[in-house]
Structures are given as C-alpha cells and as structure tokens.
Length: 126
Image (cartoon, rainbow, N blue to C red; front, side):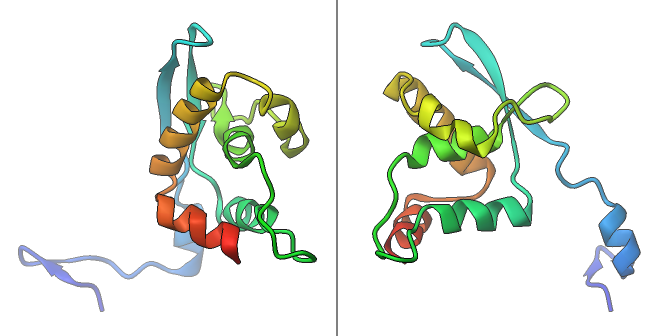
C-alpha cells in the first residue's frame, strides 16, 4: 500500500514499471579549471557501484588499492548524453593527471553517488 501524501495515495508499481523508469538520466556539469573545460558526471548503476567497491579492495591481501579518485572519475565522467568517456582500465592513466582536478571531479562524483568519506573509508578497509 502506498503512503498517503496530502490525501493522495502513491501508486504501487510493478517490477516492469520500476525497470522502465529512467532513473540515471540526471547529469552534473562541473567546470574543472585545471583542464579549462566543463565535464559531465553521471550516477553509477548498482552493478557499477558494486564494481567500484570491489575494485577498491584487494580480496587477497585485504589492503586498499590506490587510485580511488581516478577510478571513480573514469566510472562517472561522461559526455552530455551520459555515455562514459573512459573504460575502467583508463584509471591508471587518469590518475597521472592533476591531483586538484581529480579531487574536484571525485568530490562531485561522491556527492552525486551519495558516497561520503566514511563510505570510502569503510570500502577501503573491507
């Protein structure tokens, strides 16, 4: 049963209805002065979020992998239609770019994907 809001009952959706919802179309445009350009960032899918979390932790050693900022950036940077600009394997090369620019992109990507510092620390420790 849906929750009442000002006398209106929200519909209960079917699985097909939920799958049909375009819930990843919102992009965030960010100016990166170090690159002298605007970039777009997108929300991760559930599968991508899991891949991000798993990639931060090496299951064999239990130690966090480096390059967190670049890895999230390659997963979130996109063109104006939402198509990714990079493959996961591009994280190492992107990690060689300006740290201030990467931190700027990383901060917005964290906010957009509702990742806070505690989430990142928890992921890195697991």
